[in-house]
Image 1 (cartoon, rainbow, N blue to C red):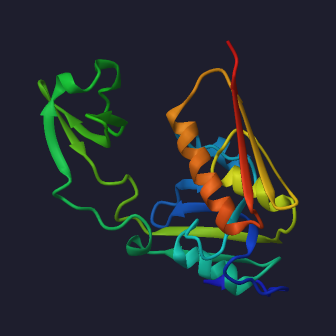
Image 2 (cartoon, rainbow, N blue to C red):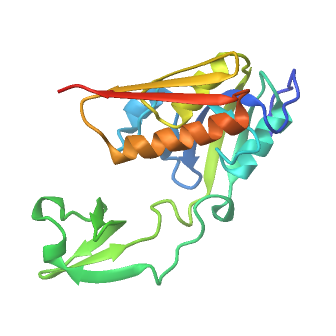
Amino acid sequence: MTSTEHADTLVDGDFVRIEYTARAAESGHVVDTTDPAVAADADLDGLDADGPIVVVLGEGHVFEPVEEAIRTVGSGGSTTVTVEPDDAFGMRDPNRRETVPASLVPADRREAGRTVSVAGRECVIESIGDDAVHLDYNHSLAGVTLEYDLSVDGRITGRNRVEGLRALHGLDAEATVSDGSLAVSVSATDPSRERDRRLRAFVHDARRLLPVDTVSVTQSYST
């Protein structure tokens, strides 16, 4: 790991705004980033970036080597850190592969290298035969060593913490904390199990990590 000098020490429990770009160490291909321009150039399915993100140290929001690097360089610091497979997505397991009838995969999605869902499980198509499809249920980055270019913008405090936590959970809602009360307002067209899951996770973390005594949630749906 190489790094710049840091101006401020960070510890577990701190809300920290960071920026990063992660690449596969061997190929140099971008696999994740917070930089919208880098994300656009990478042109990867599902890779979305809206700028710096907020993480809470000690909560496992990033891989442990990255979290340790954040603590080491501190506010205003930057570093390049290598994350081995055992600290990321693990090694590839040859037992997590199978061959299924081609009919289980929609014809318009039968393409080697494509990520699909079969019987509710996400997997990658390794190859396609006349009547069968060979699937790999390992994570696409299993066995891959990652390299992070990381910048630590600094600790965030006050009202910015609730917004950072909301964004971290990907929750499309308004959330404010005032006098120990958290108010969450969700406005949507239809109910969503995924939104409800994100809402529960956000409220759970907010009660643990923010100065919150009471929580109120309002959900409204247009017709």
